[in-house]
Image (tube, rainbow, N blue to C red; front, side, top):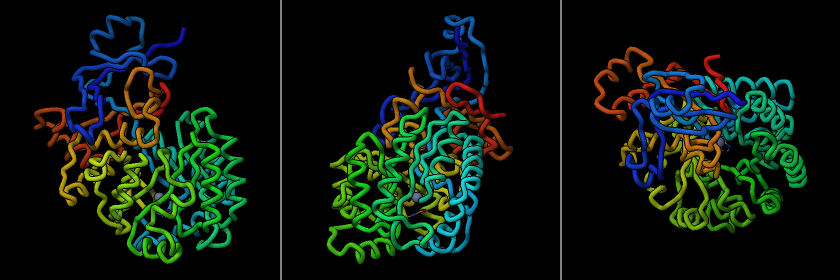
Length: 431
Ligand code: GUN
Ligand code: ZN
């Protein structure tokens, strides 16, 4: 007989899209429980009821701890972990000065594995159970990330970052090698254990039309894969794209022309959109990813989460490390709140939590596996301490409801607020 675990605490989940219907989408149990068996959530309800129904289950009682789906970071770059908080540059200079030299170091498989181990350990310590990562051009960087994730039992999404121009020679391949190596890695990893391969052209400026076309062809052969790239992050970048693709209608068109627009597309940043681009994203059903700490850190601009969501566009939330300035999805939610205020919409704590869990999972078409506490979902769970520091605790003490209780942790919390993390039904934090 497999072991049953009854996890007790405050439970919070969603029934419906919180970006569309707000707090009404949230469900909360003051003393709730999840029954976990075989790595999945198999029952959910009141603690007392489930304890009576499953007297043989091993009880793990988190008391006042808040039990949530593990956080889903839907856009980040694991090779950039060690260059987080690099000072003073905007996107193109930041890439050339810091990012590309750093990514060169992953030509060494040992270095790649060390970076992957470090990144995934940091993720778990911050309550993030799934990452969607760009790797580098080097196939060994993809192997390293998927192997390190498999060691930890984590569901991850990643792909070889393809470039064939406007990058140092050591980081460029060709249309053919990008296609061949991506195809080989996809065959090796996609659907193996909890690994999902993502076709990954970095962004239009670093790929020739031929390379974009080759990757569009690969995606057409594997339509069940996600495709990730960057879109309209900074105005200088957009001007550059227009000069490189003079016949394109706009930035998004440089992807669509080569078969790189679809329902399983995931575009990071998406700040300076033209109306036609927003219309196309909505029509096609593509997803966009909000990277708020990065957008302020690199000086990119204000992402309009509420406006895009109101068009029915799926929105994920992400750290975008190392352009982002924090590994914490709590800090990322806080930044999303602050950006929302600047954009004219105060996102409700329910919406922030939704973006960091089920919203990101939906952006990945993975909400049947992760990002929820639904029966049948994989038991990737993060338990928060809502009074993790004296500063947070004194505000938490005055809370009148769950939203006032959780908002100080969203705004002021970090890895100290992460009480416990479970991956696939196994406790991984604290170690
Ligand atoms: N655009 C192209 N590459 C990158 C990257 O690594 N980080 C960010 N923030 N934007 C990019
Ligand atoms: Zn990025």
